[in-house]
Length: 279
Image (tube, rainbow, N blue to C red; front, side, top):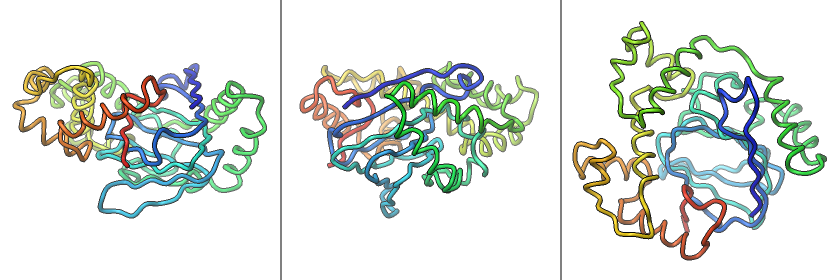
């Protein structure tokens, strides 16, 4: 697959990690994306893809693209034989400046791009992107569209600062201390986070802590799960195992089997590292 990434300029750099272009044959027809401390926007330029947001819901089709706010559980993506898209990897609070509704309404509920920006605007954007001269021009067009749509949101400065502290500590921070430092009540802080991120600061910290633990795993070598859990700040290994199942749908040992499968079948693939084979 071809993958091109571009970091946006100010003022988007405080909301977005990167813009990306993706094209080619996916390594698997279905990929599981574990819960992550980030959000996602996809503008689809190829055949429709599908998303299943949890085992208790039905798979939905997305033709024009989608918006995914910070998830609390794994998402399953179903891809066509060839896929083509541009997208945005948001910081957890990033989508709030581009959404017409509170982020909490989209928690674990991916929506189509049309539901967010309307069909005429999305159709025009997709046509402009499809006519662009290569990935870099496409990402520049997407960045310009985002700057044009950027809106001020009450409480964003508070959430951005507090969320940055949570990220910097890998989730190992007392949320009560953050609200005191910010000079607001815990209830006020939690409400702002739910409006702009979709989850509470405590939940976001859990996701950061889990992500840090997973990224510390070397699937090519032996794993001391107890040491890994302790290093990530978990009280004990059973607690870590519970979090693992909550965020991925897999036990730690099953996760390791699936990661090793990806490494074995697609060494050096651009998507290796976070998505997992689901088939």
